[in-house]
Amino acid sequence: MRRAKVLVVGAGEAGKSTLIKALVPGAMNIEVDGRTVAMDHAVLARGQDMLSLIGVPGQERFAPVRQVLATGAACAVWVHRAGQPVDSSTRDLVSSIAGRGIPYVVFVNREDSLADEDGWLGAVDFHPPEAVVVGNLFNPGTSLDELQREIWRSID
Image 1 (cartoon, rainbow, N blue to C red):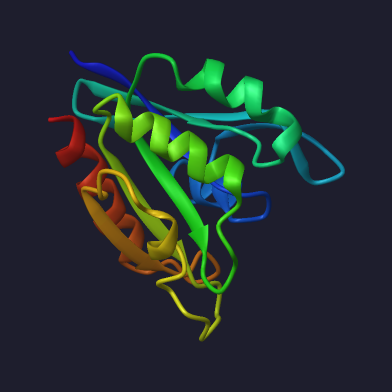
Image 2 (cartoon, rainbow, N blue to C red):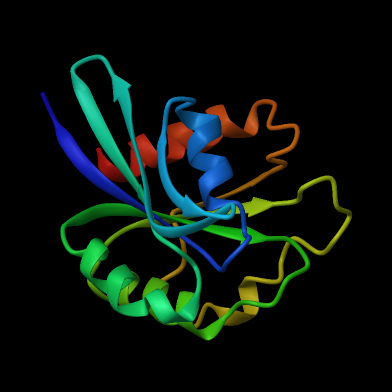
């Protein structure tokens, strides 16, 4: 049996909690007034293998918490909301993760938007992602299956 931690990062309101709940409907979320204030947690299983999905709050004031939760991560998923700028805190965290050789996957959340899905590209001046998955968390379709495949592939 294999166990691994997967960190789910992104700016506030990018869709991190929504993504985790879409992947694992019984996911835990510590929130106040609809905003994550500590973390999300869910376990994604494949046979005997289990991934612990840890979603961290996107607000800048939680930067120290995000760094602590990143310890021991085997992979990360960067949730980027299409059409939004990349915040410096998320950029720094992803850069730090990539700099430690931890693979990451970008999930571009279109949310029924026709917004530009490449906005995250300008922020990446470090190791590129293992994969980019474009989806819509209001209508996830097959993008969640593709994302799961990429996450498992990244840790195998």
